[in-house]
Length: 178
Image 1 (cartoon, rainbow, N blue to C red):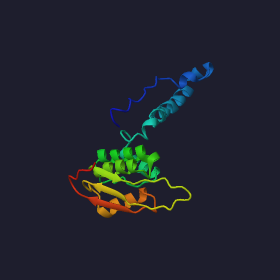
Image 2 (cartoon, rainbow, N blue to C red; image 1 turned 180 degrees about the vertical axis):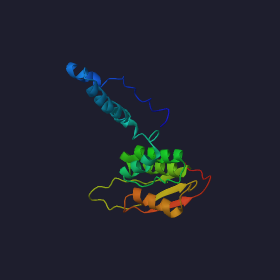
Image 3 (spheres, rainbow, N blue to C red; image 1 turned 135 degrees about the vertical axis):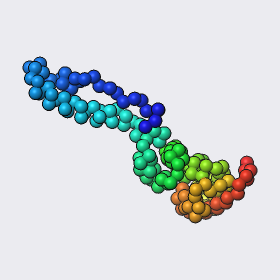
Image 4 (spheres, helix red, strand yellow; image 1 turned 90 degrees about the vertical axis):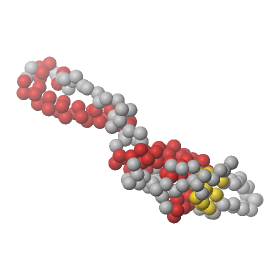
C-alpha cells in the first residue's frame, strides 16, 4: 500500500475478551480460547477499516486495477504498462464514466492511454422529430499512439462514439489545434 493509506488500526489487547461476561472472564481456558479469535479478527477488522481505499486507483493493489477497469465496462488496463500508467488509465476511466460518449470524455481517456495530446472535434447536434439528421464525422487527432496500435485506438474510439456516427483518427506529432 501507499503512504496515502492510513496505518492499520491497532486494537487494544483484550478488546474481544473484555466483552466476555464477568464469570466467564475468570476461566483461564475460555479467555485463552477467545484470544485466538481476537487475534484472527484483528486482521479482518484491519481489512474492513481499509476497504474504502480498495477502489481508489492511487492506492489499490495492482491486481485490482484491471478488475476496476473491467467493472466500469472497459477492458483497457494493460498489465504490461508501468503501475503509475495503469493507475492513470483507471483514474481516467472512473472520471469519464458518467460522460461516456462525449468529446471531452473521449479526449481525457485517450490522453491517459497514450500519454500524449489529443484533440476531438465533434460537430454535435440537437435534432428534432421533423429534422433529417446529417452526421459529420468525429475527428480524433493524437500527438502519439503511446503503447497502442492504430487499430486499437480506432476500436476504442468506435466503442465510445455512437454507432451511427463516422469517425476519423489521425496521428500527427506536434500538431497545433485550436
